[in-house]
Every structure is written in structure tokens, then in C-alpha cells.
Image: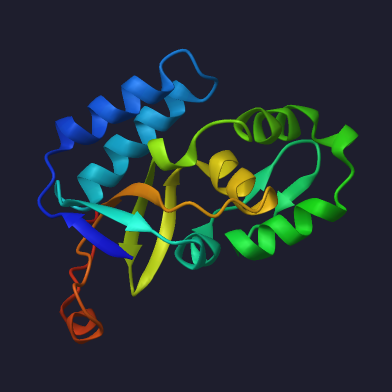
Amino acid sequence: MEILKERVPFNEVLAHFEEEHTGWEGYKIGLIYLHDANQRWQGKWTLVLLSRADIASVMLPAHNHTIEVIPPSGSSVADAARRLKCLPKEQMQNCWQRICGINDRDFSQMHLALEFENGILKHVDGVHRLLAYEHFQKEEPVLAYVAGVVPSSEADLTREVEPATG
């Protein structure tokens, strides 16, 4: 993960989200997720460039349609994409259509929303984009806005700030 810009204002995060997602299914819930992360992390955002390995290790939350796509305990993007290959697509048609519909997008021009907590990158918004990236074996680096304190080196991991509660 390469840090491109520290102390990103939340209005920049929102501007990119709106530019890329207005009119897309999931737009309204994505806005809620972004606002929740912004509140948890007290407005701390960083713009980073993620490698394929970084993306594979992002933790995803439970995700269900008529079947369990990602278990309640969550899963890494890599593990979720492996699981996705074995699932009956007819039982998750909407999810599968969203994943396939993303395949032709230029991943180098999109922005994911993640948070950094306890040394782990976690999903805030973009579960279908993350699954599409891994499932279709994309290689290009991807931009992400990360809420929380992103360490500039392994030594910085001990200085993490916990998210705000309440």
C-alpha cells in the first residue's frame, strides 16, 4: 500500500464517490457507510494506492442474498472470491450481475472506501467491486480512501488510534 495523500478532507471522498456512483444501485447505502466511517474515525482519511496483494487481504463483512456469499464472520477478498466460484449463481443473481457488470470498468480509475483498524484493511464500501477485481483477476493498482490512521511503516502500527464510539 502506497500512501498518496494524507489528511484528505471528507468532501473530497464524497465528491469521488458521487462522481463514480450516482445512479448506481447501492448509492444511498454507500453514502451511509461513508458517513459512518467518517464519524468513527473523526474525519481522518488517507488516499492510498493498493496493489493486488493489498486488495486480496482486505476483510469483507458478511454478505447475503438468497444464499450466504460471505459468512457472518467475514472473509478476506481472496477467500470470498474463491468461495464465489463454487456458489450457484442462480441463487445470487443480483449479486452476480453486479459483479459481472463491474468487470469492464477501469479499476485504475475507481476509488474504494476502506478503513484501517487493528492493522487490518476493512471494507467500508465496494464489496462487489472488490469481488469483481479478485474474481476476474485484475492486476492494476486501485485507489482507495482509507478511514483511520494509516501507518507509513510497520513501526507506526503501534501508534494506531481506536475508532470513536457512541
